[in-house]
Each structure stands twice: as structure tokens, then as C-alpha cells.
Length: 280
Ligand SMILES: *Cc1c(COP(=O)(O)O)cnc(C)c1O
Image 1: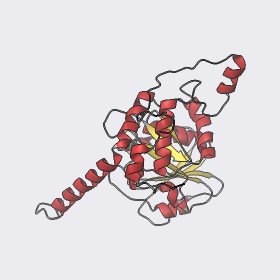
Image 2: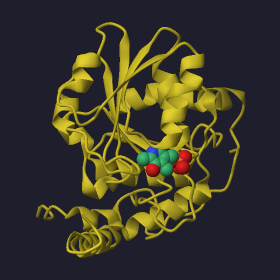
Image 3: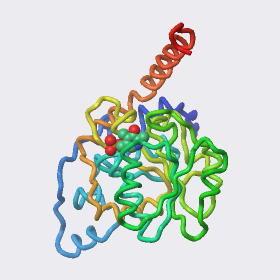
């Protein structure tokens, strides 16, 4: 048997998440909220299974699942889990992993919504957050309280000021789980899991979907961890819409050319500004 050559990430983006579409190149839109079952035992089995994809769409949905498979493949992850928005992904993940008395370490340079969530609802629920400066080497690890810190949250590049976290440093932290909001990089720009980070998170509303026609969030990581987060997420209810998942999966098909052009355009603007007489 001939082993196919390893695809480049941009090519992977064109083919990822197609395994369950039969011979169709595009995914089917499963708008259904509910599936028929073959009686009470069958219904009960589906209701108590993890991520059963033809039971009830708050639990899982075949169209959303294809989007999740595509993100998992691009992130080099075992699995992915989608949410109704990026904030839905953040809120559900934090509340799945933390409770009253838990401690979180987070960088100060965060998307305004994430910052407001950590300073507002989290503090109100009795979750303590220590904010550190992402540009200080070792700051994340130094702020970890052994036995109490459940989660370390980075965002790289950060929104809006593009500050960078050292992903290797983050990935080497033992004890708490580590999470990177990788929205601005997209899965083609960086793969946090390859640096030892536990969870890569995206507002897929942004670069992943790319056409302003989807509001969606997604996390990628190990199967067991994501199953645990799912068990809470299914109750939290930040459920992704199948239509938005379909749009986001179509967006992924052009992620390679879009990120290449964005990088080129950003470089041109930077070069122009660097030589501009009115800029110091
Ligand atoms: C937009 C954004 C979010 C929130 O995502 P929504 O889809 O708007 O809920 C989270 N993190 C970053 C870095 C973002 O840019």
C-alpha cells in the first residue's frame, strides 16, 4: 500500500471534517433538534451516552460534529467541542473546570469579554483570579498556587494588542490545566497542544469562519478532558447552531489563502508605517 504524502495544513483545511459526509464534498445541514428513537430503552441509552450525535442537538449534532472533526484535525488534537460563541466556550470551560474556592491564573492582556467574565461572574461565584503580565517570563508558573489553581489562561496573540505568550513555558506548567485562546492565530498559525498546552480555544466567529456569517466557539484537546467539559457544557447550554457550524466549516476551506493574504497585507502596512515620517 502506498502511504499518501503528508498534507500541508492549508490542504488539510480543504479536506478536514469530511469523513462522515459519504461521497459528498460538502457537509449536510442537519437542522433537526431531535431524533426518533426505537423505544424507551434506546431513548434512555442515547440520553445517557456521551456526545451521542442523533439524539438531541444540545447533546451533539452531525453537522456540528463535522466542524469539530475539522478543527481537531487542524489542531493536531484527539477531539474538539463547539459552542454557541467564543464567550460560550470560555464560560462553559471555566465553569466545567472550576468551582467556589478554585483559583485561576490569567494574563491581564485579554479580550475585553474574557476579562469581564473573569472579573465579574467568576469572582461572584467565588473563583479567585490572579492576573499576571504576559510579557514577564515565568509569571504564569509563579502565580500558580499548588492544589488550588485549576486553570491557567493565556491568549496569544492577544486581542487587540497582539501580545504573545510563551507557549513552551505555558505547556511546561504541571498541576493546573493550561488553556490558550488561540483565536487570532487560527489553527494554521499555531498549534498550542504541540507545545504541551491542554486546551486550545477559538472564537470561530473570527478567523476560522472568516465571513461574518457564523457566531461560534470551539475548544480542542484530549478526548477524556473534552468529554468531561461536555458533561457540563450540555447543561450550560451554549449550544452551537448547525447552520453556523456549516458556515464555519465552509470558511475553513479558505483558511490557508486567507491567512496568507492577511499576513502579507499586515506586513505591507507595517513596512509602510515603519518608514512613515509622521510615525515615530
Ligand atoms: C471575539 C473573541 C472572543 C469572544 O468570541 P465571541 O464569538 O464573540 O463570543 C474571545 N476571545 C478572543 C481573542 C476574541 O477575539
